[in-house]
Image 1 (cartoon, rainbow, N blue to C red):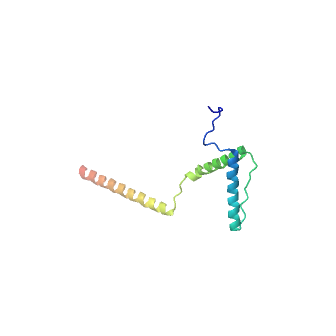
Image 2: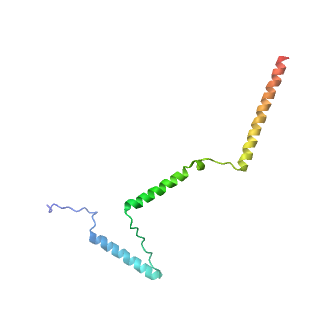
Image 3: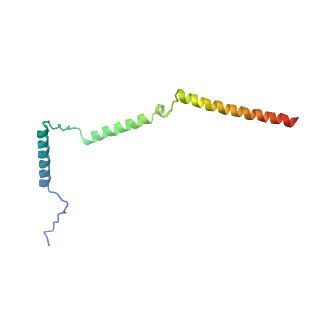
Length: 112
């Protein structure tokens, strides 16, 4: 039997990780040398992870609050919508008046 230690096949040693990083960096260096451009500088945020996550959370909460504001929930109609709704209302009123008029005429005929 082995010495009691078994290493999973998916295990990657730190040396191989460093080798992979070094090869990738060399490829990038060659690519930038061919393109005659400078590589972008990495932006390093020195704040703790807690602060960065808290900032992201507050930004998301502010966006949700803005979307849920009462003024954003009210739909204001424009002139075209107003005209359309007014014509619909006028048509309904005319129909109701016609029905009432017909009922009155029928009642008058019945009473005679």
